[in-house]
Length: 223
Figure 1 (cartoon, rainbow, N blue to C red):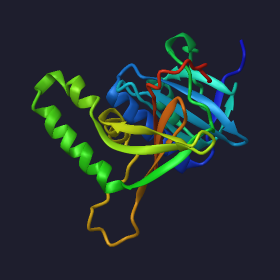
Figure 2 (figure 1 turned 180 degrees about the vertical axis):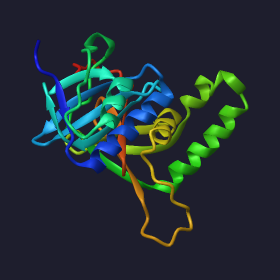
Figure 3 (figure 1 turned 135 degrees about the vertical axis):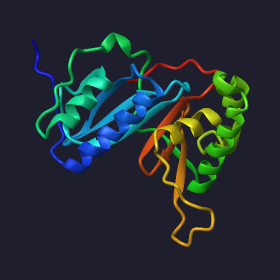
Figure 4 (figure 1 turned 45 degrees about the horizontal axis):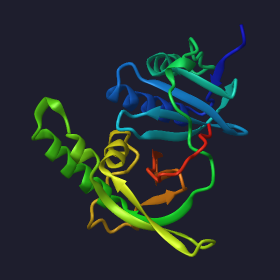
């Protein structure tokens, strides 16, 4: 059998990885995560949030092999059990559906104060609670709450890129946006909006979320 292991020597990185897994399990008790090497000494953890949005966060560590799909519960237990290498457990490759976004090719569109996303998430939760145990309706999830323009200098054209409540809920549920009040005297915490022809990407301090764009184009998946 091929060796499978994850090594996270820094205790703070290990704790952050455990926090990522814990939040994923709150959204899905049978959560599956995909781990993929980003470069020397680092890897990214990916989770399909259930909002049709992918959540990702980078960590310091080494992965063997460089692309693993594993159960979040097993990884969390192993990460909290000690300080040595983490055994990812059984390979669950068939449980991961779809491809990952590319590592590059995203244009920076705008920076939005973090408190705006926090306020949107709170308002969304209040609206969702009105629907009781059925959760937020599709109409709320699909509602675009921010819109920015993506310009293509080569074609001298622009198209509209929207951020919907699915992305806002995913950012909030994964704890990626720090809580910052609108009247906070500290330098403004921002959330960065990027886009490619196929994906909308929102980067916060503690992680990023990705959602496929409905461009009407024929696209080849990458991942």
